[in-house]
View (cartoon, rainbow, N blue to C red):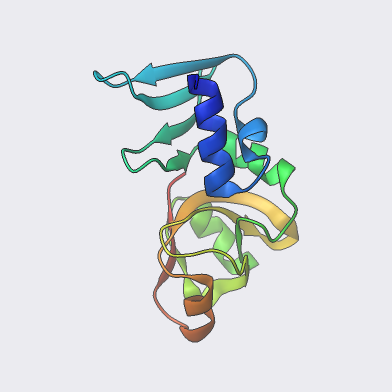
Length: 147
């Protein structure tokens, strides 16, 4: 299996069917580890994703924008209230008490699209608790912001 097909399959598994085609388009370049494993994918000068040794991707804002365009809300999203948007844009973590809506299928450690009111893309991040836990807790970090 060639690198591009493998990466698209991994993205489809992690984010849902169609994610690979949405993220991995354009003039792609691969950065590799000394063992030959793809560690980062670029579209021109823009990094799209980093590929961890666990087989999961971390998203750049460019890749997040592509997923945001591909999937309708609430898929892959954690929506915060207006009072949080400024802090999230600065790279501060998102707290559970400010979450307004969340994709019910999200689990702890999932990569997510962080949105504000009206489904505006604000940041990318990693869930620190599951969607179910967010309903039960009103304190604590819900999403660690990446970019």
